[in-house]
Image (cartoon, rainbow, N blue to C red; front, side, top):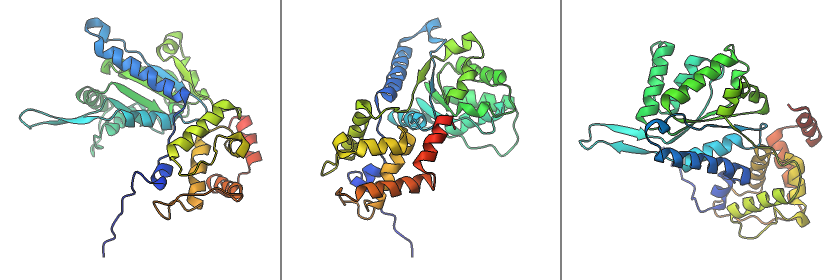
Length: 313
């Protein structure tokens, strides 16, 4: 007997909870900058087409950098171009997101670009030159405009010198003539400061956690509630409900904690038991939130989490 897989309906609360991804002003600023760069590039011609603008997105782990950059790729999907005689199909990908290889090597950097563009791993051993040529060919063939290189920190723990790694990345930008987005933690910012020219090449957009439980935090939670389109409002962003204060204490203003805790809370409340089930909040909700926090973070107490955060772990 073959089990039938039932696809979840996109108009259900369960679907909205599982796909919770709410941008906020700093994230939208990154998107706006990239949209502006791409728009200007379309109007460039001749020698002005070369020397593309790039950016770096820097911030602590858990602030939502990767989620936002993956979302930007999703918001700018590609398409398949078929030649007039139907003899050739090319997947056009204007925006490509990828993580740097871990451990980082120059050869694997080029290989990962090819993987991100849908090219399968070659079974035979290839040289760095082969991997480089393949990556550059695919970037041009698939008309990539923006290449997002996440987890810049992997370079810091590799056996490749920082200068050699950044030179390889610079070569990608120059030879492929595309816009690069480099993303990493504040520790990775040292790579951008190897020299002044390098620092100017990747102007920094810093994304921090929500350090205070203030109006900015309330508005984020209001956006989350709006995106969930709840049948009955619960006041996620209303300080009178104490939910903003509790959620801020649990997450310390990190989306990487906030989002899975909210999703786990709804899971515990049974939203995934029935696709059309609506949840009513009551006095027991705070206990459910606590359970959700521990399900996501294990036996790490909020106090221990705050202590680690202060030490920069």
